[in-house]
Image (cartoon, rainbow, N blue to C red; front, side, top):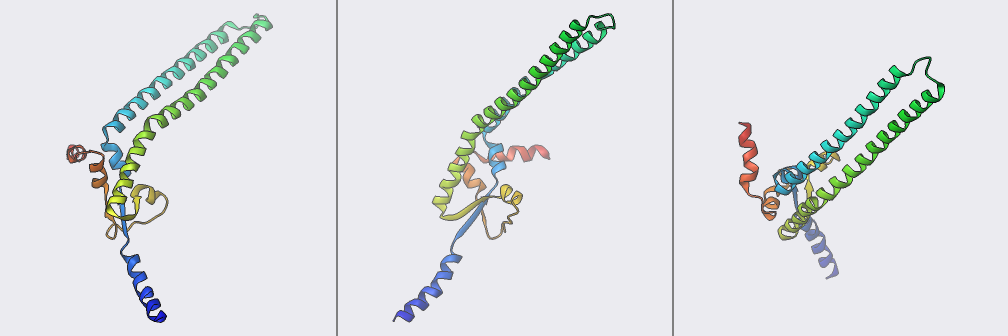
Length: 182
């Protein structure tokens, strides 16, 4: 009796492995179709331009002052004035470097702050689709390619449109972009 039960388990176990469902989705396509992503992206780009403008202004000020001091400082200029000019330029350069570093950090923080909720919303929708569809794995096909993972799309279900539907993204939002390419 035990042998028959063991044989039955050995024959049924591989069948249960075959019944597992795998899916993939295109994270980039979903993000690009989300209105909140477009809004966040525009806001981040505007912030980047603002920071870049500030840095360019500081660079121009530094360059202008350096050129001015170069013209003013002659052999007749006292050493203490030359040293003061050099120190002032060095201080301006250090402030410029600090501003670049601060702006980079603030930009990254703002980017994270704006994008994290959107990314979490997508992942929540993917998790919902996985649970409702009974999928064992749902893989982002773009990330998998970068990681060297091959997805056989004929054996895996593309759930991109299902995830988009869960997010309330209509088909017209995604078909408008390809139609413009024609």
